[in-house]
Picture 1 (tube, helix red, strand yellow):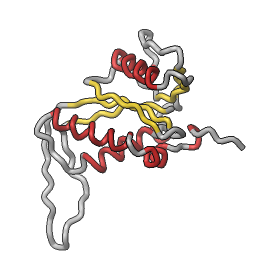
Picture 2 (picture 1 turned 30 degrees about the horizontal axis):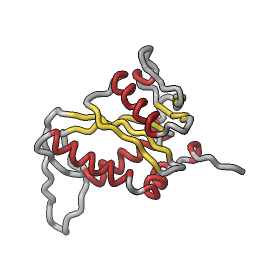
Picture 3 (picture 1 turned 120 degrees about the vertical axis):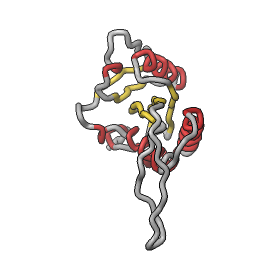
Picture 4 (picture 1 turned 90 degrees about the vertical axis):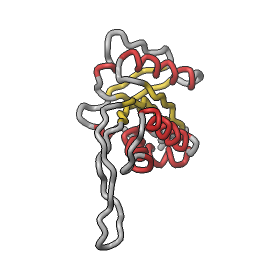
Length: 169
């Protein structure tokens, strides 16, 4: 499996969009500093994803997430790729018995397939949108995560990096 955290907030940034010739598109923009975090782990070979929306990125939240993954896959021994975030190797991190964490190389987000999940969510659900509240953003985030989780083929296509697939020669 591969794991990552994504930050989603109410600050909007105008992105390119289609408009008819000689028409300038109007895109709303707003700066409201409210954020939430998504912890997600993908198992590309199984076409499965586990995700939690949590209020912060910290060791305590990582402990909650690892316990959720462990309970979701109780019959599996999980080797989970993580980046070098401080809460992935903190002294008070509690790693369940059926999970082992391996660090991906430093400064290499392209090696983590969960980054593609964040790109997909931002492109399909957050592109040039304003949210009246953090709860409205969380609702859209839940919908996007549920759509991805319900489509194993699409999840495999997005996250099926060769180093995570069990390829027998």
